[in-house]
Image (cartoon, rainbow, N blue to C red; front, top):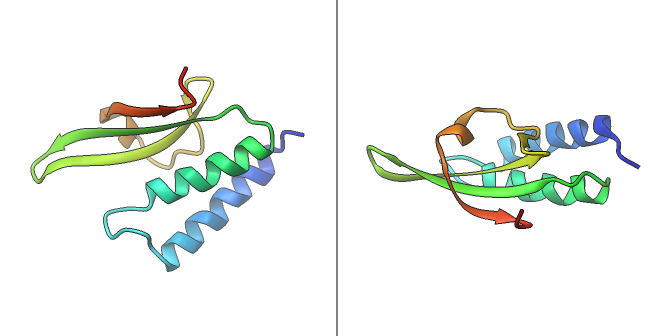
Amino acid sequence: MKDEHYIAKMANYTDALLGIFPANPKGNCLPRSLILFRLARLQGFPVVFHCGVRRSEEGLDGHAWLTLFNKPFLEPSNQHEEMVKTVTFPTQ
């Protein structure tokens, strides 16, 4: 039942909605990742949800993203590369 086109389309819709109704002025990665995690899992993709932090000039920055087989899944940036993982679900 895996449908990559469906998930990509849902990512576009999610990005559009969060662009109109932003959840956080610093970014929408957390709600985006949670929404896409649920939709991808429903389609049979064994995605993994991650949260991480990194030091910045202002203190700590956070980011949330998904992986599929240890590779970024529908991740629009490479911000995850700088993060130290703090949460992974399900645990690997």
